[in-house]
Length: 446
Image (cartoon, rainbow, N blue to C red):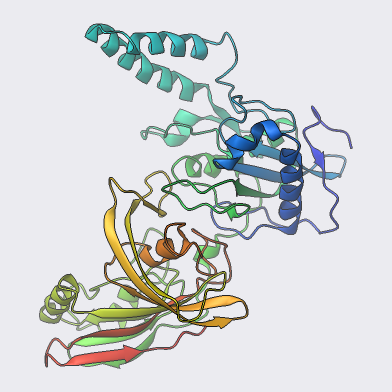
């Protein structure tokens, strides 16, 4: 195969290339991507000098491409640096090489470092000003092509928003930029994690992950122009309706399907709130008392008037309401095992909507669980959340300090699948009119 700098590697695989390019923010890796990742792992095994660094955790990526002559191969990339360098044999070059010896960046970085070590406050302040200016200068050096040959700078793509530190050095933009520079046609792509999971985030050895939102999404909107990209699977048509299990003058209890929002979002997707508002036009007040994740199915109670809304809301605040979820985990656990998970959670601001464990900024979140069975090598588990943090059950299942066992189909914290196997099966509360305890159940339909 004719290669450019020997960076387009042969890909011995009989799989047919996909018709559409990977939607990078939610995907199941194509077999060609899986094979390319295996070859990258083989290459990494030939470099024991990188073992310690990789063991601490690093993201790698592969981009399957086709040459103009028709042959298919792949490019490989690492996020940030590897072995203390931005360039390494076998891997594509950075979009902009900030570590090039003798460059303005390196000289200014050294000068700022010297000012920061000074005891003079004026010099330290000068160092801070120059550091901010250097970051702006650095972002201005990044320029990106797309499949149409159009060029755009990073500052242009982010507009009035300051790019996060490290933007442009992730695998996805590096791979696509390298392909366009070589006049290669991108076919499919994937990014996978090697090494230990970070303390706060959830990353599993060898698993594929979507491109991040804060750093990569604004860049990829440009980089993917001119490619035929898969439709966003999150915008798929629902294959199950919203089912009303109970209704009276005060409340409605529904069984929400996976893939439906609780409240309207940015995308034109169906939501429980809009659907119930349409079915009960006489209803007053906010309707929504609590929420389920878009990917989670199961029971929700809605209030049909203001008084019922405040009554139910107070019950949630005082923990009068009880909920039991059922989930299928990726790996088996001993049947009968019980436990309590107590981990502080907060949003990952660089990769929304992901949540992270953070002992300084996180809010306490508590879940009790019991393993109730095993299904074809997967644990069947009941979960009782005592707090209502975003993605609480998903993070508690996947995190190494939790169960270290992601929920099946979890595109954010595990392996993407047809659906997230998490279902709100039982819901108990005091009826806002009678004050009597009522319990509703709805078995999952995976």
